[in-house]
Length: 251
Ligand SMILES: NC(=O)c1ccc[n+]([C@@H]2O[C@H](COP(=O)([O-])OP(=O)(O)OC[C@H]3O[C@@H](n4cnc5c(N)ncnc54)[C@H](O)[C@@H]3O)[C@@H](O)[C@H]2O)c1
Image (cartoon, rainbow, N blue to C red; front, side, top):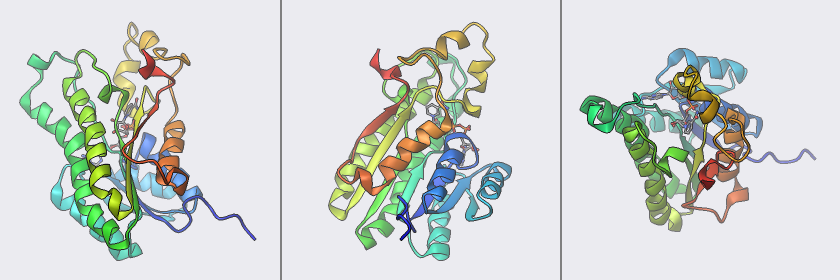
């Protein structure tokens, strides 16, 4: 008899699935037997992920900061697959590197909406479906910068710190319904979001080695942690934030 896969027949939504960590997570989930819904505001990226999954996934164009679009994402998932077992709130953006007094209010709002309000919305609309069935796993992508401060990234820091504490809140609220809620806190990972840092010849050699392992991580290394937290192997883990940062949080 064939071994049962770790996410056999689970229905999973991955936001930000059109690139980087989200794409790696969608690929790994699919390899592990999940039916995957890729959500992203970037149509080209989202469709490319689905293509890489041999068209065995559903793409739903979604702006995660929009309440209507997040509600529709959950509805379309239910219409297509009848249920939702796993939600990965992963989509995110950075902010311009300026002192907080020089950051515009518009940019502050945008970063908080895309990185933090989206997590609230995803859980708000997915939790009732998971409560109906008495089970579910939610994994939110926080950041090393949600655990420690850094100059010039105020909105990003605040949004990701918010994700860490919102994860604990939701774990407390939904534990009795069989729903686990956890987060990952990646360090510097090789994706589009760090392109600006990579171009900085002075800072990059420092940033790229600022952890115990002395290198940046890959999207798949984060996806492996997300898979673990989403799977039944993490059945007694909830409210946790797992650092995936080469030891970057240790100093
Ligand atoms: N790469 C890193 O070093 C790093 C470190 C810590 C945390 N993170 C977090 O990991 C997550 C994934 O980022 P990544 O590194 O894969 O970067 P990425 O830029 O490769 O992927 C981010 C994805 O989110 C999508 N997205 C952005 N705004 C959106 C919106 N409003 N609605 C829907 N989708 C939207 C983008 O289109 C993109 O596909 C983010 O939350 C990011 O903050 C990344």
